[in-house]
Amino acid sequence: MFQPLSGIRVVDLTQILAGPYATYQLALLGAEVIKVEPPEVGDWTRTGAAPEGLQGQGMSTSFMTQNATKKSVALDLKSEQGHAALLALVETADVFVENFRPGTAARLGLSYEAIKAVKPGIIYCSISAYGQDGPIGHRPAYDHVVQGMCGIMRTTGTPQTEPNKVGAPYIDYATGMNAAFAIVAALHEVRRTGNGVRLDVAMLDTSLLLMASLVTNHLNTGWMPAATGNEAWSQSPSSGAFETTDGTLMIAANNERQFRDLCRAIDLGPLLDDPRFDAPARRRDHVPELRRLIAERIKGQSADHWEAVLDTADVPAARVRSLDEALAEPQIQARELTHAIPVPGAAAPTAMPTLGFKADGVAVGPNAPPPRLGEHTESVLQSLGGGNLGGKAENR
Image (cartoon, helix red, strand yellow):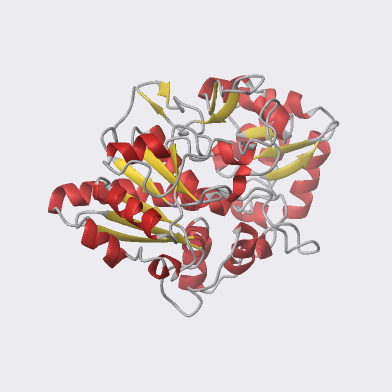
């Protein structure tokens, strides 16, 4: 198996989505991730809808999505024993990850300086909404709040319907990926220099990096993005959303070759000799008419028909699908983006995310179920020589 982080121990104090998703990726890469949770309540996402057989057991689908292959240790960090147990755990760790509101870790005696004093070569990663500095770094936030802050909502939808939130909590998950990338890079830096690394990963920073071309275009030219609905950012009249007899088709015919292949594929070849459309500059002067001609042709057949025709013509196109339709696609199934594993008590194996890439042709997925709250408290603390220091295992 592809396990490049085998032998790396991660102490994970994160909850909800961004932080746990970061450490989940480290776990899939082979790291031993020890999730430290408050006794009795655990990670906030443990509550909620659960697969059949796991209702009311702190094993919600939301929790399981990013916590498989981890160990759970239940510690009361506000108690003397719990704090001591955590520091003993830090002594054995390579990475420490927290996503408290800035200032909270310090109040708990878990600042970077405090952790570094215990383990000088530690990688200390803080994940927060706005970062550890700046005038609003102290503020809390969730994905949809950051979506409002970063500007993406004013570009989503049409001029009549914006602002619109992106449907999925994509900033949470992208922040988790960003943090995991930073941690893996820091592991190499520690190996190179022997010095610990302080990482500061923010949701707002990540959200703007996801809009990098918009940000740099605005800063360098003054251009302001506008809400364009389902149209392509290229603004090409032969790209974007087109209605068919049974749904919407997304087409990308941006360059000259793609435009010519599109016209031939949809039986509009005569347009290539039309003086209004025979060159990009002239097409820009006649966008409404060109758009109308393409749209009228597309709406006469089904989306599946045109997807197949344009695939043969090597013109990028896809029918707009619902989530269930997308997941049923043979291509998505071939990519193995989820991996079903048995979870004790569940009526059926539970699907969980893989890393999202293949290594040597193999998708890397979880090899153990998500932990019950405090499931590993006793075994982990005994391995440190501390017995049940800090609290009992919590088996819910």
